[in-house]
Amino acid sequence: SPLRRLVTAVVVVLLVALPAGYLVLSAHQSRDSGKDKQQIASATSLVWDWPSRVTRRIYEVPIPSRATYVAYFETNSWRESSLYVQFRTSPERLDGFLATLGLTRSDLTPGRSISDTRADVVGWDLRSAGRSFASTTVDLPEHRPEVAVTVDLTRPERPQVYVVSTARF
Image 1 (cartoon, rainbow, N blue to C red):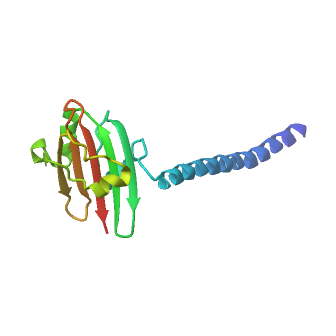
Image 2 (tube, helix red, strand yellow):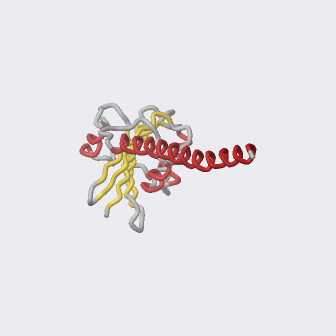
Image 3 (spheres, helix red, strand yellow):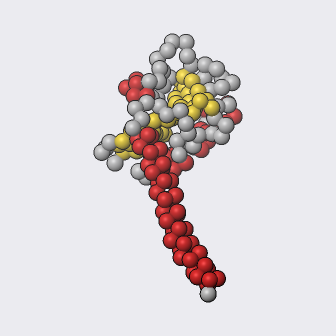
């Protein structure tokens, strides 16, 4: 009967077209994802965006909510991997950030904990005269990263935070 042939034709088309459409869409999404990862991996300087949640978790860098001017850069070698992060925040959120690392402002000492060599990797100018820096380094236990924090308190109402978290293998 013509109706039965029509139903059979529609079913066959759907059985072929739907999986084919799904494969095309999936391949396209996978390709886009690879381009994003390739772009991040080929970065040679700071990327003006938030690092992924997974990256922040691995390096234990809890960027406060509503932080601004967030940028990051990741380096990898056989011996160590480092995540460089900078952001601007409020004094209250700075305190919260420090608390997540087990610190308070009284743990910060005048000066910088990030070396000039490290700062030069991403073009941070932490040598400027007239700026007020406070810093510390936290060596987290049990094969967790070492987190160097330098805070520019020149504008106390909007501290600028620089972090280098380094995992060694």
